[in-house]
Image 1 (cartoon, rainbow, N blue to C red):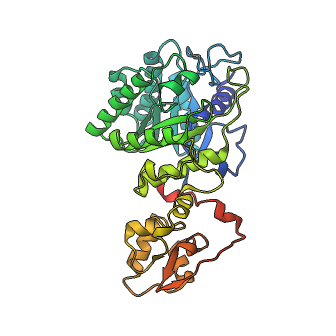
Image 2: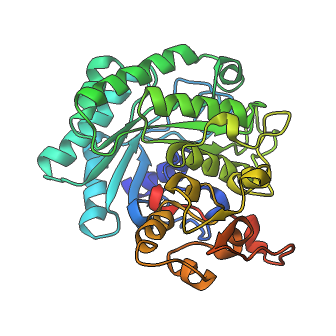
Image 3: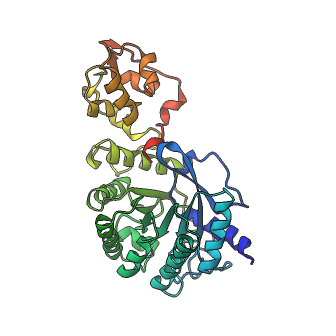
Length: 385
């Protein structure tokens, strides 16, 4: 294959390393020609086009779900670091991409594969003087020295945990050890605390193939945010791949993936605890209603809240009101009482969602029934990705 043919193939495969937003909200079809251009979402909801590709799909691992597993029969190709760096700069200088996500399968051993990723980012930074965004994937069991070396050229580092514990990980990747992955994540976190990465540290979990519960996932995510200071946990809904041991498993529901992201926001930004999330008896979130609305319906004793006097934390618990709209409400009500839904809507609140849980200057606006299908979809909080 020539370089551009390899780029299309390895870009398509790289989609399994997620760094964007839930599939339930993806409205555009991925281009086959530009499979390596990935639309991630940055601050303020701005789309960022990433050059996102694997350096190689040759892998020594045999993970049961993975498109690159060693025993799977398909075309294996690789880039040299020089070749990959040149391709990135070609598309960057043409204005088609704004940043770079470097990842790889493990060929020969983790350190050798990691060294080639580092060499790629070194060429991009030193030879081409590129000063923009680079996200580098840390491969399992990479040495501490190489993690430090990768951090010199990266704005973000990530390592995939894949599952919330060893029991589930063994069903996905029987040769991987969860405790060792956590230990490696801790090394990266310690490095980040000493020498902060501009865009932090992230991880990814594969959801929906091993029977793991949403409660187990959110308990782990909470620990990762508190102890490891992660920027984000990404949830990748399982997709069965032909010619893998899990090819006959059902794919993860896109709505389940979406609800996990929404629950994640409640923990990271809204001061919820895992114990407060509306899990069912088996530890799963409802898929037909967003977790914040489900929580509010389970706590009628807390509502309605008077918008003109509620605390900031109280406002944040109201469905249809997010961090930005709560800040606006606090600021604007100092100028005078908020009395109408129209005024509240101007501050960014989704009044169709909030009206059943509030009063405005003592007046209730609740409706017993609504025909709005949009009430089943919580706004994805772009400003907080």
